[in-house]
Image (cartoon, rainbow, N blue to C red; front, top):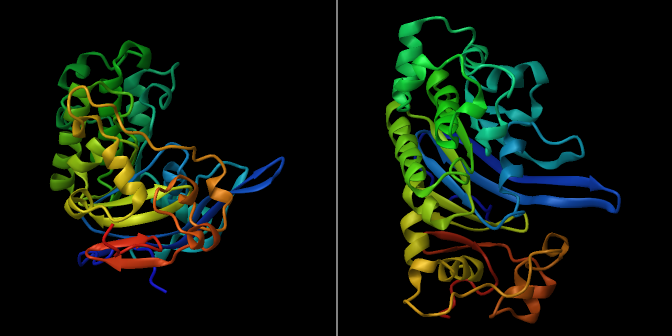
Length: 326
């Protein structure tokens, strides 16, 4: 059986995730949040993870950093990082990797910083007591925040969401220059203009620093602008992995096609927006294909048996009908 990986990953592999599974303990039992997720990431490459809310994207990132919630646990899998198995490392060794070689840009800039501590003091916390004014100017200038040099005694609520997001990027990407950068929906709370600036900044940082990146979002428009390859998640599973250009030109999985058809810019003026019927609720507990209840081309087999990954073109797809001319 083929592993559900990003096929034909470029040379210089940095990250290798194999059959990762995560469950959450609830009052009604364990709920699978991530199931059989596998992908590779090369140095300097950007891998996008896209899917509806609750599909397991952010859980993958917290599993990579081993910072899952107390009621969550990894039940199987391997996470290889530059030759080391992250799941086998003791916590002190893992702690040395976090922030230094593995950086994280959190999802909500407004709640990711202490509201009772000045920006300047927090910068020094996260950058190992940085007191070099020239280095601080270089870091803030690198993310377009030169004006903040005169406001370092200010508190987070005195700054915009875009400024705080760029500040977190400066800490995560420029301050430590990590080998791997994990970006958890870093543009979700931003308006369109600032969003475009942040995406451009991340691409520039990738080119300057050479970090590999896993970029999580639910926005296909955003993912198309920044990713080299894309993984589409549904109900905890990667259902399609492909180069970005291939995925948008020839989506293979019915869920991927449905997501693309729902993008407003693909509709003519006055034409009703297309939606995906049904709901994702409960799909992560199904034994067959999790998308089968909402899929317009599902077979009886789809509801009974979870499809294995299949290579179709440059894509790797979990679909019993992959490769058919539909």
